[in-house]
Length: 345
Image (cartoon, rainbow, N blue to C red):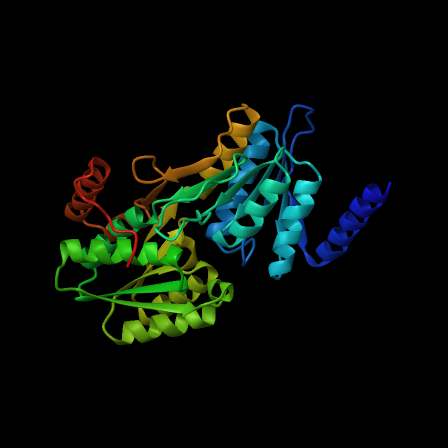
């Protein structure tokens, strides 16, 4: 009896804590065969035209195509994040997904506490020992990882080939290892096609707020453009929207991230380095539905079509045929292992 009362008390506390959290749900068919899925979004929430929106699209697709009942939670501060995950896990959902590396510790703890719930985390930071060897993960947790450095390599080469300057720019959000992967790949791509080109790289901050500060993004971008940069690649969440504002005001170019961001500044977006976040979320739900969920690390790179860059009617005029052919060749070389793209600075 005492344990039951304690459990009820804990759930009441969680519900109170989540009063400040903004939930939203995908419309789904009412089917008894559908899975119950909960998705907790990252800092910035819906409308970032990037990371979170990709996860939302994946959830919506799972609702429409797989009959999943999907709940979304947009957390406010850090405590809301953990509370949101815990609430979904305590309700016994079939799959709970965290969107972003900042969920790593919380989702690892919960996976151990709720072994009968499946968990997935986009950009999960796999723990390692002092020698850098990966540590075991809970069997009911899958890390959805991307080879961002490979896609970044391609847009780096593109920036150097069409930028008409020996200087190219990079604006990162939070100064962390994950965003360093983007910078490392971008820098390697630039140097591969232009050994004497300079990469100017700057970061918006050292806390998660660095991913939602468009004003800071614009400030950094304007500084780089004034130094002679003509193309800037951002990996900064909604902070990158400020980069596009700077590109528009100076008549220069920006490169988007995670999703096609052409619509943010038509005519001033050279391309976007895209990640299949929507596909990774959808596949995680599908694996649970088909009872073939396997914990561990799933990698999505060029070979798996998990990363790439946008080339379509909106930007074809900015990418000459010979440059497109060069990028196709680089893609083939990376997939074949002839080019090893660094993932650290």
